[in-house]
Length: 175
Image (cartoon, rainbow, N blue to C red; front, side, top):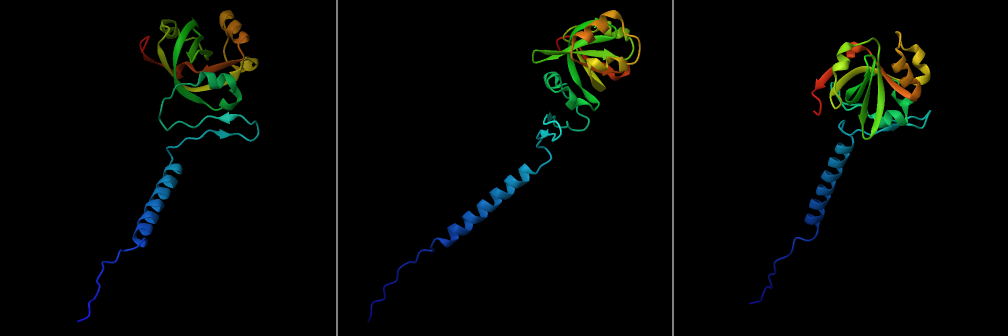
């Protein structure tokens, strides 16, 4: 009788190539979905000025007012600005200083607000619908400014203007 040599045959490389292709495809699809998600915020460069516009915060979020960014590119913040800030010094009942990252900015209120005198340095305030003004445009701020407020405004390049009704105390000093 003839001897038949029976050997087990290997499956080859094709099953591994197929599994590798599927895994690569799933990885690329996941990466594409992640890059296209709405959660990713990228700063857009405005073509007219070349300055970097800040990413928009999520709706309803109260973010920290970017004092250093505003001071470095005040024209990028012409739209109403919402956010929270830490008070560094209360000067008059029409204005106070806010600060972050070693920078500070003067906030001017549309009308005297006596409660502002009660704010302590280190206390957090929430500011809504504020407008960034170059100090040269201070004449367009309504109401009569006291001498101390006007002197401070004239000594800084940029101020933040807000209606008194759009300021709320958010927490105690040091919070």
